[in-house]
Structures are given as structure tokens and as C-alpha cells.
Length: 192
Image (cartoon, rainbow, N blue to C red; front, side, top):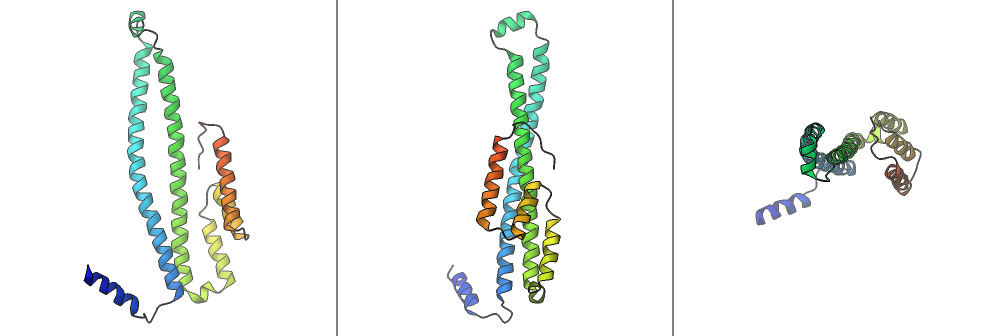
């Protein structure tokens, strides 16, 4: 432990001949990109597991519904007041809601992928001082990054930032968009 602390202190104290602020910015951007990738990979594993569980539940619900459809009147009498058909319809509706939630996760994963690419591209870009100081190169970078965005929300947010919106204005826009989604009709599946 002590030797590790001394190594870190020596590394911090020793000036690097090729140290630049741009390299430090790039290193921090790459760190952010790596953290997003790590979180996305962990989330993908959890969501894959949930998808398998929900797929199994959906198959079980379909099987039970088909079996309930052929119950004899005597079998229905044994079940009492339980309306199996309505209960199975409720389960199917809940499964559809779960599918919609998984689609939002897919959308989130895609957007995080775009952020990761943008961060790594920006990290490379800022290390080239000549390139980073030319306005036309920045325009080219923005054009390249703009092609990533598929959803309307991403396109609007990107356009706002390129046109000079503040981070607070962007957050307000995101908040308003999120409220619209919550108020929208449940069960609609968005393809993107």
C-alpha cells in the first residue's frame, strides 16, 4: 500500500514533457466514455435477463389462456368466481407495458452509445491543437456527430446546443419532453 502511494506521488510530482491541457481533457473524456460503456454493459446483462423472464411469463400466460378457454362448465364452477379470462387479459396488458418499458431502455442504450462515440471523437479532436482552433473543423465535427442522432429528441437537443442554448435550457427542454412522454398514451410502441 505504501509503495503504491509513493509511486502515485512520484508520478504526480514528475512533470511530463508532453503534458498538455488538451491531453488532460481527452483523458477525462475517455474516462467518461469508459464509465458509460461499463454501466451500459452491466445494464444490458440485467435487461437481457429480464427479457428472458418476461418472455417466459408471456408464453405461460398464453398457454394458461388457451387452457382456460376449453374449461368445462364443471371446471369453471370449481374455480368459483375467478374470471380467468379477465385475469389473463390483465397479465397480457401488463406484459405489453413491460415491452414498452424495454423499448425505452433500448432507446436509452442507443443514446448512450451516441454519447460514448461523441466523447471519444471529441477526445481525439481536442488533442489536435491545429484542428481544435479552426472554426471550420468544429463545424465538420458537428456535422459528423449530427449524423449519429436518430430520435427527434436527440436531433432537437443537438440543434439547440449547436445554436448556443445553455445547459439549463437543454435540461428544461429534456424535462418538458419527459413530461410529454409520461402524459402520452400508454402501450404505444415507438419504432426507432
